[in-house]
Length: 437
Ligand code: ASP
Ligand code: MG
Image 1 (tube, rainbow, N blue to C red):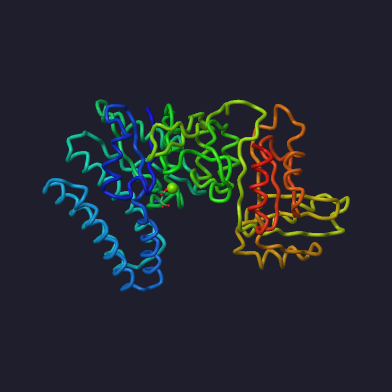
Image 2 (image 1 turned 90 degrees about the vertical axis):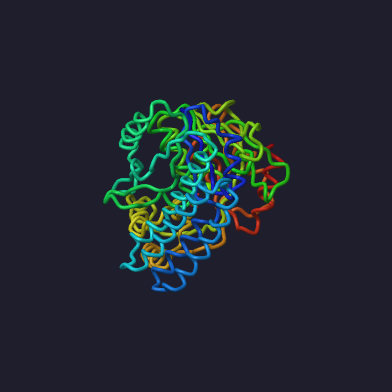
């Protein structure tokens, strides 16, 4: 069994929805996971926020506007009157439902129900389209099997059991369709896996039923070895290990949702990143064994980083110091990304600055604090385990003309990271690219 996930642009128009059959072979056993039509989740976020803010008229107006887009889409999607009528009923149902939620007390629970309508719409539209052209398919309601626990962690075993049951009801069907992104939480309420979560759905399903392969279909030909918006001549990475992919996913390699790597890795299901616009291209394969060892595979960057420097004589020869500092970040639920230490100082970075003011106030109890905004982490990812000399030197040599704020090496066998002012990012990415590839 294969899992094929298509993102918002791949179902972004009637044409694209019909075009899915260029890639999906209905006679092969597979589960197709779909995102909402491009732009829909953003629109639903706006609608939900307007309702939450008590701006009911505005929310209803936005709902009407967005419904109109779907009316245009179904006119193109369906060829028969029956098909069109079914499509119209479907969008009437979902958009009336959205509007009706504004009549009740509107809480974040209702907001999440609204966010779920996009995937429910896209999958049912695809299913109806297939029905109209005589291709059998089964719609699997994600809300019947995708579940997260009280810590918002997906319940992979539960998902596997439920899904296996659902599949066994249809032994003769091959093509199954389900919603990405949406799930139920531990209260049984409708919830979601956060923005961009459809990749995560696909990877969780792949893990839960031990699929042969998960395919993530987007509009790019795989993961590139550097940021194509900044550097010319980037190339797709043919083969990556799970460990390398995990390092890269965090660094804004936006084509894969950062969390998606872990379920696939844990249950050893290969993930392929493929391009809808060029289905024959080989894309990027992420699997346990990442191909050749001892290679530099990619350079990636993450902007919007804030560095916090704490200088404290109390750190000298003391134990428990770092724990006390880290506890502050923990209390404010703020993840720390990069750390470097000296005997009397520690520097660390965060990207979530919502509680920065409070954090700083508490950290100042430990010593002198300096905060640097507008920082970028540039990381070089590869398999450095086989041959552990020379990599850090090559990386540092490539950026020797730039002021570095932090350097981190040895945290894993797969990553050398540097922190610098965002104004030097472009130069760093280019110089590393020229020297390392
Ligand atoms: N539709 C959701 C979003 O836009 C999930 C996804 O596309 O992966 O975030
Ligand atoms: Mg996406």
